[in-house]
Amino acid sequence: MNCDLCGKVEETLNRALIEGVELDVCGACSKFGKIIAPVKRYSPKEQHKMMQQSKPQSFKEEKIELLAEDYPGIIKKRRESMGLSQKDFALKISEKESTVHNIETGHFTPPIAMARKLEKILGVKLVEEHEERHESPGKNRNEKGFTLGDFIKIKK
Image (tube, rainbow, N blue to C red):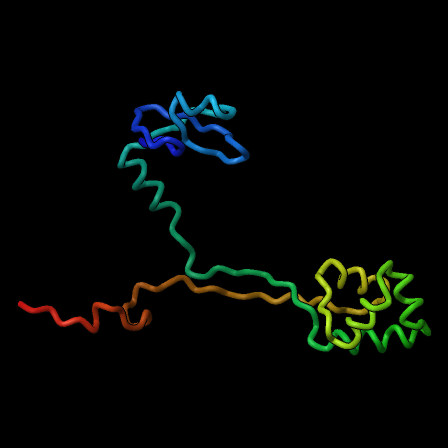
């Protein structure tokens, strides 16, 4: 096996924490960090068995937090219904008055953390959670589309 740091080929490597990164290093390079544990080598049969057990899922779900499309209007209407001016509201949320103005006009998109703070103070829903499904590439060649090899003529 090769050392991740110097590239030297050695039979035994150690897993070491070097500069905040875990690396498989040889004995000489392990002095640059803290040794965590020796690296275990697997036989080809064990590697094959491990690969079979960890089959990739066909769908990967991801949750994304997004602001509501009409967040400027929601914030402005709720602030006005509470009887607060932009200046008073800015003091209440510990932000600048210009920030409040820019949010309400749509010139500034608040980060999710600030949007959560606005949700609590105003009592409205600004952050929406969306789920995305990513499909792993299928085995059916027709689904992948064309490849460069589909356009090349090979002389025989």
